[in-house]
Length: 155
Length: 437
Image (cartoon, rainbow over all chains, first blue to last red):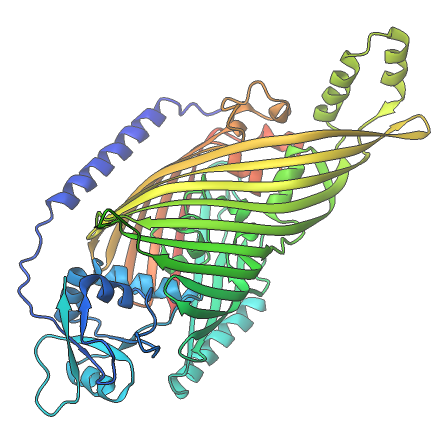
């Protein structure tokens, strides 16, 4: 029989030390100074003109799947962009990686669909303009002439 | 051949999804792993290293109307002699969204289990190659993965004296779990009852999961109760457990002549036995997420409450003996993970399993009479690294230091001599490559 018993307490000590280190690292992370503006936009036929931060979170976490008038909510995102990271951390309380994992989770357990993904704000605006119930976010106000609804955020 | 067919289906579907418009979503994943132990075969042949460790799935989702979401997923896996790449339907259901607080799902539904149970088939969704087996035992995988029936689920927002109390979500599943013959749970019950299985069947089951996203950002608390009706038919083994049981039965007989007659004539080994009862699971835990850091704790109590009847032989007649088998197992873990960079995440956990929570040393119970005492526990220290090459592929490397043999008993068909060929302390190394689209 092997005699590894004296090693077990050392393993526990190393594990606990690693956890403490990770905890301290986690809490010492400096919150990035984030002054990016986030404009929430939607298709003009969306009933709501204002949303709370909580409602935004519930919408993008697919807990709330329909607008007040019963239309399906269509989500849009822009992976690999600064505005996406800002939006995720500020309103969804998840990092972009956590949000992507969350979406994959919903899809592969049959509880949701991936949001529509775009690589530029122009593409996102074009899609939201023509898609009933669509919602997304921009780093600045949309240009004049775009038929988009700017949704006001309340606490 | 099955793996090749599945891979071809996945590749075909990738092209098909590109060609179709966006009404039907097609997604999939493939994961191939490698396992190696220094001692003890965790599944077959891990001492020599094995590639019998993989998963693949193909998922179809479509929004039928504003309120109706339909989803189907085909799945195949191999884990030693469990799964063997047989294609199954891991879920096939329609989800009707009535209100945020009430949604109804019908069909084959993914089993909700703990914080991470519904991701155990999907390697890319978790940090670890193996979820802590103290709460997510591999042997229970096929009885908590999916169930045919209905599910109601929703989210509510309780408040107390005008103070918001976070989000409360619930999932209630009711239906039938199709546990295949040779499943892990059948093996556990048969081992616990020292029985050779002939057949098994399940009865209706229900599952209630409550999750509270507390007002403290990042903190969620969960509690769950699962109950599955189960029957098992078999024959009693000719082993020291039943011989000892017979001796215990005869102890209470004061008449020496009658006791002597029974010693010679009563046979309770290699006779029919039937178990009927319930498997239950209580799981609770907490998870805290702050930016790139995730800390979690979960504890599970596994119950087996069965009545059994033995058709003992007494000379030329059958003597039915009825008794009960009530066991409670305990498992818990502490885990932490941290995303250092977009491409690198590290995780660690310490998981403890006791198949009998009232006998943590394996000394007193008849169950451990024919095996080393270290089968009464398993303590698993795990360290894992995940490398994300991009959104679609990742590699995990993981090391476990194990003390005890509980999970070996759950997964490997050990014969009586095999128990004493195992070692108490052993290492398990795992690597897994995953792709998804």
